[in-house]
Length: 188
Image: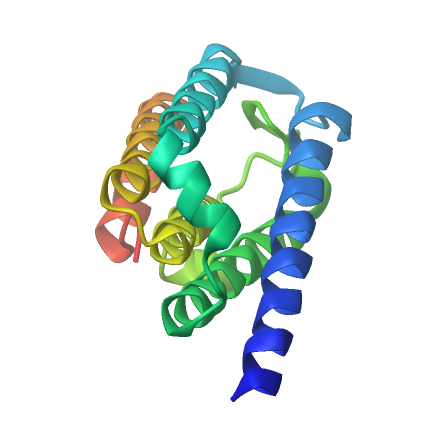
C-alpha cells in the first residue's frame, strides 16, 4: 500500500503542476484568435473568485498545520484521481477547440458551434473539468472549511462564466445555440 500512496503523491503533484501550467498558458500566454470578442470582464471575475477561494481555503492555521503533517492516505488518493479526471476533461476540451480556445469569450470567422468531442454532450467541458479538479482538491484537503472554500468559490466562478458565455452566444447565434442548449447539458 505504501508504494501505491507514493505513486499517488507523485501523481497528485504532477497533475496539480500540469493543471497550473495549463491554466497559466490559457489565461496569460495563449493568443486570442477570435475575430469578434464578446466578453473579457468575466475572465477577471473568475480569476478573482478562484483566488478568493484558494486564499480562504489555505488561510486557517489548523489547515496549514494539518496539511504539513498529514500522511498521504486514501482520501488524498481518491482526490488525486478526481483531480486527474478534471484536468484531463479540461485538456480534452482545450484540444478539441484548438486555436479557438482562448481566455475571452468570442466567435471566430468560421462562425460555427463546435459539437464534437465532449462538446457533443456538454456545452462547457472545460469549466466542468475545472470544477471536477477543484472537487478533487477539496477531497485531498480533507478539512471541511478549506474544502468548502476551494470547491464553492471556483464553482460559482465557472457557473457565472458559463451563464455569461451562453447569453453572449445566444445573442450571436440565436436559435442555433438555443437548439444546441436543448441537445446538451451545461455541465456533467
